[in-house]
Image 1 (cartoon, rainbow, N blue to C red):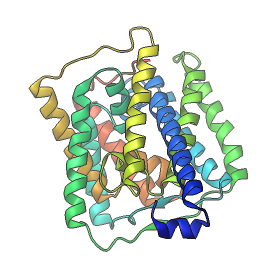
Image 2: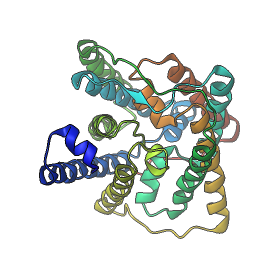
Image 3: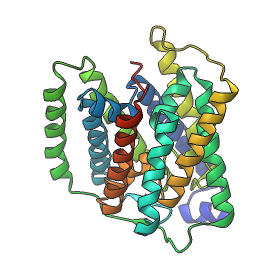
Length: 318
């Protein structure tokens, strides 16, 4: 920690050092829980969209909205405002970027949530998805494109409203999943875990998102690295604890190229919005940003159109 920050905090070097290690330990624990939850629930926007349009099973999609409400509730309880490193892009960027994000996710066969889960399952090829995202974020950081977007934050919703909305959403998901879903309780816990941990991480490391944590634009590079390592470790541990959940699969050249292309498309969409589907769900929607709602609708609509036209092999693993 720098001397200036020590002076500001009013602590001596030893106390400040202990605070740093305690913060990193908390961040590491939260990152582990986040990765564990994403693998345990096999939660993914691509899977949720496929189940919605192809199998008429909306439960997993409702769960994603439930996750956003959990995030909004934590922001409200902590009296914190959802914050982004850059403001939302104009519609001329936002609309094509959301469509591009949908195409990238479809090609990948998983969103960033699902990609973390697949890596935990031993599917190494999905690491190339994050490599593609990282490459785009790195190039963007060199040129700072698009320009003119200032950091933004927005007030969260009233806690009382969210406390009423959350059980209503859970009840709705229970109602539509009674005959078709057997993992209602597990998905409920998983959505709460993802919403809570991701929001606390965003408060501790402002600007955090799952996408940004693997790129150089993370607000705190050390924190971003710690979160990434612990998140993937949590996913791996979750898979190992499930019967036949982990099976190491060495990727083919074709698979690596496909994930790299998909990651590049996802990264381009995330740069131009700015933010991937994780940012839209866990920062944009809790902030009540209409830009996030529009981008997410266009993103899901693109996914749905591609699934209807070409089908999808995406499916839950737990």
